Image (cartoon, rainbow, N blue to C red; front, top):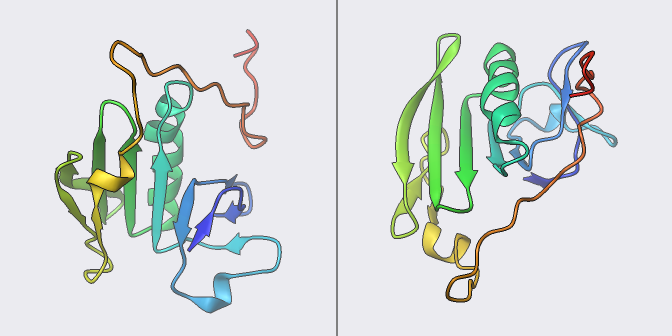
Length: 145
């Protein structure tokens, strides 16, 4: 298991930096990066990255053959498990903070989500937007977005 930042080279043109990666084939682990599709990718969504993570990155993961993708939304609490089915993903489960997530590809892996989502918020406190920089592999459009 690797925690960001770690480069994952999915193809000659596509390098991504998932939040968490599980690699089961030792030959894919290089000193500087992961070379090829990991077994499991976990993306923690923020308001500034959710669209990129749910669209472009998920399409890249499917094309590369990543077997399972988890999309985790910190607030409101939600963890979605997607499993590769042909050339796209099928939703296999959506879990709230009171549930235990079951990994499909690695069946002995379960995650109690209560502790994962256990970060304190004061009454009336809102979750602030997290602004991340644009990943280096995303080209800017003409309007600067």
